Length: 62
Image (cartoon, helix red, strand yellow):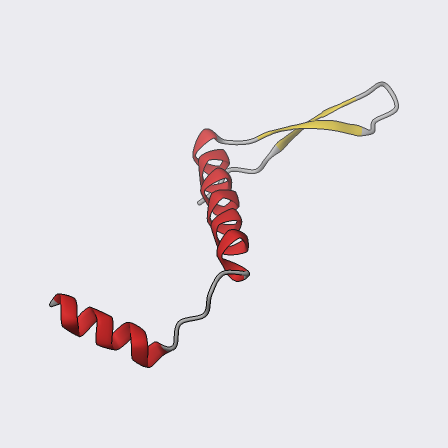
């Protein structure tokens, strides 16, 4: 279970920074990296499911 985040506030009580558990921070970084990879490949060439299945069978991975 993730720990609650902690905030650093200014003199007016406005949130300025957040303190996260290191494990939660690392999970967020992984999520960001995964989303960046998805965004990079979104505009790439499209391959049909059938073509992928044929390639996997040909390579012996399916």
